[in-house]
Length: 183
Image 1 (tube, rainbow, N blue to C red):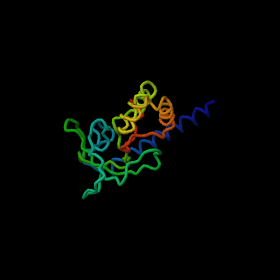
Image 2 (image 1 turned 90 degrees about the vertical axis):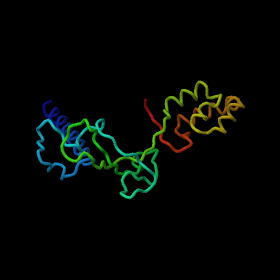
Image 3 (image 1 turned 30 degrees about the vertical axis):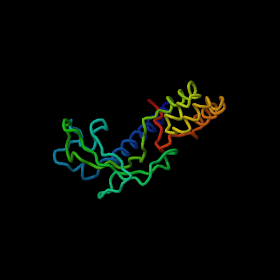
Image 4 (image 1 turned 120 degrees about the vertical axis):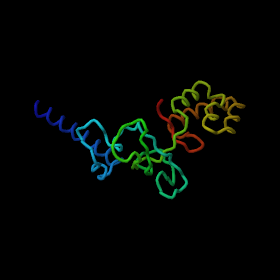
């Protein structure tokens, strides 16, 4: 029993250390740790270690920039393994006390463009008032929404087909945005 506890604890410790090291590699470089006055046991963090709630980053763009940060050649959707990664410049808020450079590069930022569409909301609309074409209007398919409205959801058939397409993941926003899966 004790051996199993030790094994599980070491596995947990290894996972948390790996996650911490992954987060460090996304924002900090070795030079950041050589900052004058930095004490790892002290109360003041390095600026690159500040949690995401305390800094803002530049947006991701499809237009190439001179410094090549924040540039994506395509936005990803579907499988996370297929999503392109980029780097963005981030700046710590003025009210936050931290050591080192207040502007840093955050690496491994996924090229994902979220819309204001929430998947559960669209499914709810499609199930309850989809026969009026509301789901197609919300997804950006206005012409199909009008056609669905005029035919009352294709006399119910189109309505059912759209619910099946939504639930199977084959009906997505018209502009190629990625769903916000949760609220």
